[in-house]
Amino acid sequence: MQSGISASQDLRDAFKTLQTTPSQRGLLAGITNESLVPVSTVPSTSPSFLDDLANLTSLLSPTSAAYILLRRDANPNSSSSSSSSFVAITFVPDAAPVRTKTLFASTRLTLLRDLGVEHFPETLFATTLEELTREGWLRHEAHLGLAAPLTEEERSLVGVKEEEEREGSGGTGVRRGHVSSGVSFPIKEEAVGALRGLGEGGGEGGLVQLKIDVASETIDLVSTSSATPHSLASAISSSEPRYSFYRYSETSSESGSDQPVVFIYTCPSESKIKERMLYASSRASIIAIAASEAGIEVSKKLEATNPDEITAQTLHDEFNPKSEQKSGFARPKRPGRR
Image 1: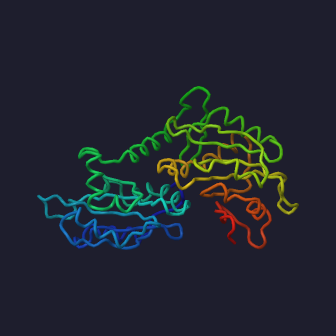
Image 2: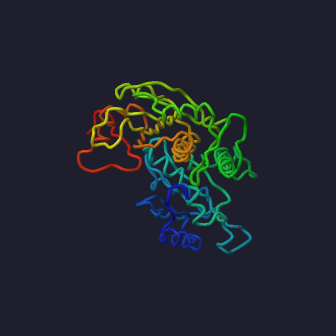
Image 3: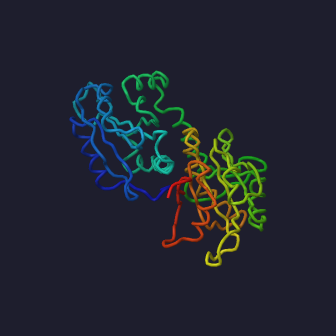
């Protein structure tokens, strides 16, 4: 599993109940304490799937992510509830926090596996409440055609999973990082070279920025440069996601590391859905590639929506904690907040 998260027994039981309860149209699920849990049920007040979509309005928020499992209309020639199939909707509004976006995107496949992929011939990734209305769903079906069970985004994600399992480098000048979890894309040789340079010393304030080329599905080098803790934010793109490796020199003697390397993942809110999903799923493999190919040991991992959240004070506090030691991906506070 990509995130260590799995479906709770409560969610499994709730889904079984949904399969045999005509008065329920669907089930909302969320993530709590690293577990997939049921949140609420969607009542069925009409025989029509489209009409029952109206019941979602009071259960969803334009700022909160949710998994929505909806029972499609049963086969009219069968009285058995088992003739129904389900659609799994990953609802991740643009206004949701970036950590929530990445967590829901990277865990959606786990949800399907744990509940049984055979129950979900249809999946959808939605970002607005309007997409989940009767009118929005009709536009969705018109766009796909009756024979197409997946959206364009979902078909792309199938390709990502196939790429993850495919062996070999896939081209000249490209290396693949072999990682057991997450999505691992081929990495360009020039990107590996830049990481090696940083790993071998790279000078104070050395900064290497990488990106995912969505079209070619490779990890590319954006730039190598120098930056001070105060100029770091302005050196990172505020309009596109980035993986940044930064050699931080302003550490205290108690930090235990001389010029440690910080890994920074930034994903602006205006980033495309597919970009957010690919970057979230690939960040662990990028760190592994840096370690195996360039000998870089990442001392700290930071995650932010916008680069301006990565301030000199943020970096200082990471290496000079006042009380408790932070671990994992720490989302920095926005400038001006305490």
